[in-house]
Length: 246
Image (cartoon, rainbow, N blue to C red; front, side, top):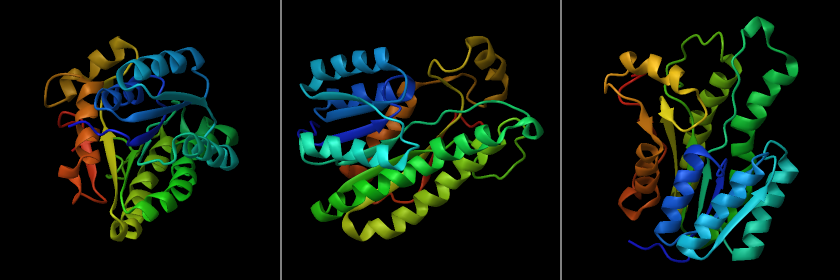
């Protein structure tokens, strides 16, 4: 089904999972704006490919951990295309470090980039969705984030991703009366280009499905949540992990 004239904003959309989502939506006729922080070359290439598919693509540099910058990003897209129908919060940087060796700056950055940015953008974009009576917000968490297990090497990132699930449910409760769905996707091990292949291969034996997922596995879940077929799914968390982490 061609979703013509619908507009999507994807943070972290220049590479990996975000890029695959952008290209899939463009293929369906969506107008797609991708946001990146440092990946200028990849952002421009994604914009070019999106434009080839749908005729309307935009790549904008923005640090969405800055509330003023996040607001300006949303305003830029709305000023250019008149609306944002789907917000996909795909940006989610992480670093591995022992909790007792973590710095204050590193700790704060995990929350600013993974949790706070979701709030900043959602609060700016939600009013337009409410006015139109339709909208989709998809937030990215991580497999096992709902289990509250120890993560000594990823503590701040893990807590932030658990917070994304709570924020998702709260937004869903508030926005459901206005025809808006808010859901989370929690990927497991996905070959998105962010992890060394040898690291991924070491994890295969721990994955019940027996293989590493691809970005297209995530794209399928996103497409369903954005569709009319997914209109009654709200406040949920979809694990895309091949059975790992459940």
